[in-house]
Image (cartoon, rainbow, N blue to C red; front, side):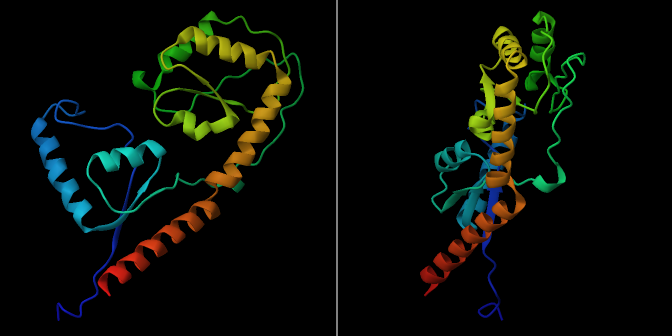
Length: 212
């Protein structure tokens, strides 16, 4: 029965973009790192492929010893659910700065608060929704040319970036359009599904070839 039982192919995915080691581990108990490593090796040995959700994850997987095929496929988004609505051109409205992320220090929320305190907002028209992000991790990769990136932890640079965007309506409009285009061509669910199906098919085909 075991000889004819179907053998499932395993493809795993990871968001990890920071290499871990026994000396650099987010948990205080080092035995957890050793346990994680053993589990990881078991997954590596049985996996037909891996999906990295950011390009740095590819290097992390190779550094950890995974030798199978890896595809870089960012996570998808329901682009159609968030329709673009141009802002009303009302000079009397104050500018609005939004934040997306957990309310924890490591996400830079304190840097944003300090940067806003340094600003003296000019009265400008609000058009589009340009996105700012720090140089931390995979954020610049996610934004591409559709967002503005400032050095992580540099409050003054963040304040300058915000002020520059508030003073330049045409740049905000261009960034907004590029962001929408990037979302539709790179992160929309149909794009994600097509790339994932292609990679899974390649892993299955390669596994069949090895078995034959």
